[in-house]
Length: 196
Image (cartoon, rainbow, N blue to C red):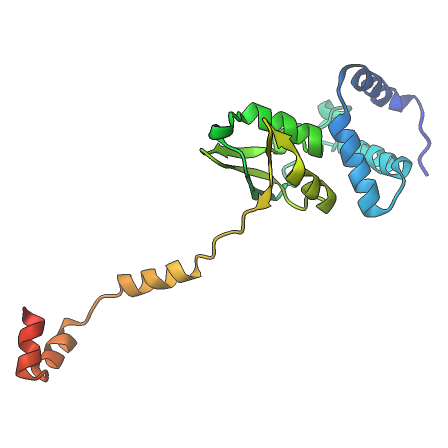
């Protein structure tokens, strides 16, 4: 078990600054959700997050200048996004900023993880992180904006198998020599109808 000493002072100072200056409601909701899902207490979750932070801050031999800094982006951590349909649009006087603010407040999603907002007349398509907890999903169905329920639904990805097989048939070249042979065998009356 590691012993925490003065080397942890920069972390404490950053925590003090964050606690004083930042609104942590989205992070609180995330902690509630993950502790419930993993069936752990918030202290254990916090300990794991401190451990993760320290792992990220440990410099490699080449990068001694990075000591004490968190990387701006961890390329190995990619969030899978899912497209959702909201039952509100331009006809309901909804803006993308209103939607972002509402989703942050009601679901605790990070504003950086709300992507590709496409507002249409009567609905909106939006991308949110995959594996939304079922209780938050149900809650978002009943949340209202401008007196209109979001009625969020997951958009099923299109199955392009049929489209691909049709393209194969359309792209196939016809064998003209076979067609001419078959037309020679066609009875006269039918041949005249085909030629016309």
